[in-house]
Amino acid sequence: MSSTALEKRFHIEGLNIAAKLWGDKSGLPVIALHGWLDNAASFDVLASQLSHLQILAIDLLGHGLSDHKPPSGNYAIWDDLRCIVAVADQMGWQDFSVIGHSRGANIATLLTGALSTRIRHLVCIDGLVPEPESAADFPMQMGRYLKDFTAAKDSRGDRGHVSFDAAVAARCKATSMTPETAALIVERGAFVGDDGRYYWCSDKRLKLASPAKLTLEQLQATIDAITAPAMLISAKQGLGQWMPTLPVDITSRFKVREIDGQHHCHMESQSAQIAEWISDFLMGS
Image (cartoon, rainbow, N blue to C red; front, side):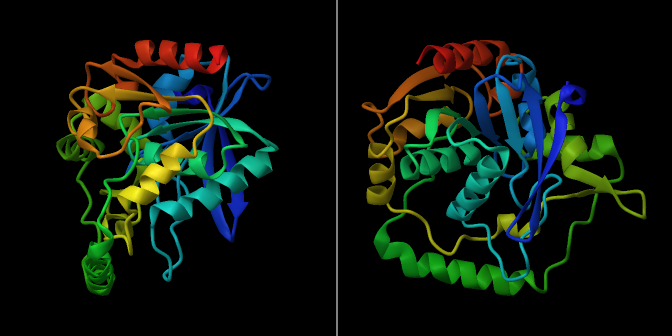
């Protein structure tokens, strides 16, 4: 499926951004945002079933084939927004729809709230917003960030895996998914070192604490600012198990769909149903 995509490269703020472009050039432009420690290949299955759309899946910085942040950088979620806007500008897309999965859905929600005039539709797949943090916990969070980044300087790097299959098994262990699904992620998200072992492409700093987290008030204000048609697809055996406990009100903004499936349902047997929902939503609103 990935062989039908066109590889794209963007140079933004001194960094190289990789992406995969599928579909009809005359189709509705869509930017797809993957989850934490995933990459653009997480949309291979879904994009192949939405060929009437023009879908650009980005390897977010620190993931897949995109560059890592410089040594002074961090991976606070809001920093991805500038990269996405710059990619859209280089594509010549003044307005576009956005599909996000997991952390990518969190980013997509923030982007849609901030730039409502440029986003035609918002689709969130098993993700919505980051878990809110109390403003009173800000000093503690900043402390975690400082400790994590200090400790990371002395930590050992990725020890690698003896084979591709071993890397796939490790990915399945980290997140419940089928080996076929994990293989798509690993194929783009790992490389073979000089010793023949498979190492992750992702920046290890993605696992470190963020300098700050958004409060409930900030997240609710973001949702309230969304004017584009919005849909949430929630996986019953994925994050959908705890997402209803988020203390945010989405009833006036989001159409909610539930589906039986794991967190990566858009890559597995549920993809046909999800593609149908997305097509109907984007083309009908």
